[in-house]
Image 1 (cartoon, rainbow, N blue to C red):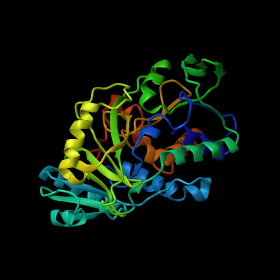
Image 2 (cartoon, rainbow, N blue to C red):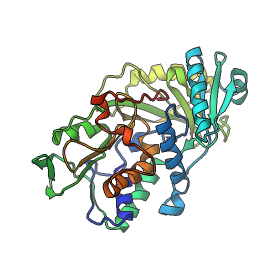
Image 3 (cartoon, rainbow, N blue to C red):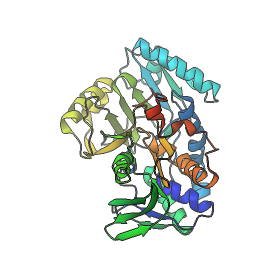
Length: 368
């Protein structure tokens, strides 16, 4: 999110930009720990619009930014096993098609036909959109970073923000272990840590960090090359090809908020029991890697864009698991907000910070 904003501001001629990253390497926070999925299939108009703008930016990323990101349009296949989810996704598909996303509706037999290696006897229906898929998170981060630096952005890793200075309700600068930086504008793009940064400025930002984890397996030559990104929606259990093996994860509904970024091996056992039940082939697989990262969850599972009560302090965070895929358009929108006074590529005025106090929440149901 930060490198996207820096690039899009610099591309519009802003030259006095400093990007501060607390980690020693860029993209090793929440972005580097995500599963890389990108999709159009959402349940709200605003999230669909964000995807309609952001995913084409990823599709032409190498051409425009000059860095490969390996966009693989394998499609997302949501499998539904409860009647209430069938009704919800029927409404989702109607909205998606209305906006130009021609999602396919599949019955249970069609799902079983498409996934012969999986056990979905209880599948009632599902949805598939072939332009959903996977993108390399590191490639996107490095591409935007290098492009921003070519345009004059000063980027400093290993340099956390330890304080934010304001006077009379206006931003004056930021504090870091390497010294103070005077500035009139601060953009908080700290993802799961955005609430912590907000507190430094005296601004309450309702973002909850929640651990999510996944693992990759040893090679499974039985997995076909066109295997889609499969989501067992009821269990928040997912699978997709990763190299010659499989990547799988499952959300823990009882995960307590916090900044833990190490795998919960007890939950991994629960996850793998569920995964093997769906794909018996996994019984013979080994684990090559396991990763835990953080979602940045808001009360309505939608992001926050724009100004705050402190003049010069902006926020773009709270994407609730969808920040990587919406990062390209988010950077462009923040450049529009700062330079034009409002976003115009997508109307995100309803995703302001004030909506939480004013009761204007827009609930996204399609969260995994």
